[in-house]
Length: 398
Image (cartoon, rainbow, N blue to C red):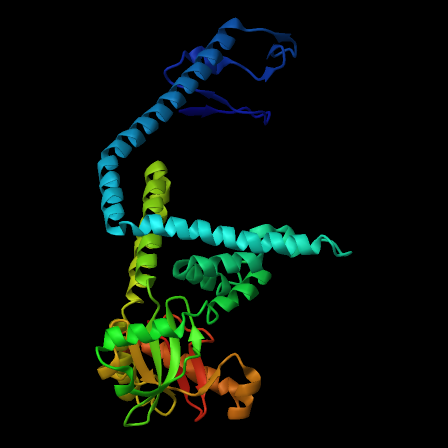
């Protein structure tokens, strides 16, 4: 396409080589006609006809381009439709009846938290200050949304932990409230924990542990941790037990998210540029690995070998794993005593320079990125401690 312009600085005139050359002879257009050299205006039917043909040609060309793009996208979608349907069928089969069960649990959680909100609203209506702003947000308020996530289970608690770890993405009130998702998830009754231990270890509990504290040290999204003492060696340990039904919940939730991502990419192929399905698949594989404590035990041993090989055992450590009383759902580890690195008051009572301790932790962690078979990818306050002997303790390698 050629471009013509005038010295007068007015808008340039475009013409196409397939249009009559007479269109190029048109001078600057003004309202009501075309300007003659003597400054008077007169209409030019031939020039107007040429411009009309050009506009019509441009519109038809754009319409043809849009039609071709739509046809290409439609053809691509039809080609990908069998693969989409196959994925949906296979994923639904692998999910099984767990999908319907999760739907019922979701409705139950929504009704339960909604009932709490209504009860709090009814109590607030009688107060002179009126309904607090937090209640006015309904279930989208930080408090009730966190409660809803906790009732929905492991997948949504993990999402809450992500919110708590991303202060640049979410409002501060949500970040603060969802901090409770790290170690304050609903606890499983101790009787259920004992049943899992008997099933997994295949022998009486008192033949391995002299004592198990029925009150959990921490209750996270997928596991619960209890303090204990080994029989014979009298070593203080912690027992990490996979919560019952967690794998079924993760499979159902993550399969649903995967199908939703596949449908979004099918309806809007632009999502494929962001690798939406690929990201969801990576998240699904990573979260399902967390329910296999044999994998975590391997990661811990790898990190301990790295510390020994680099001569860092005086600066940092990771808990020793007791393999004879560990399985896929039970992990027995050395108990480390210390405080989270964010507890500045407690840190100051243990070491004279908290800053040096933080620098040591970062140096050890950065070194593991290069020299260790695996590295700790979830370093937060709950997983990075300053121990009583001044060393840095790395926890939770799931």
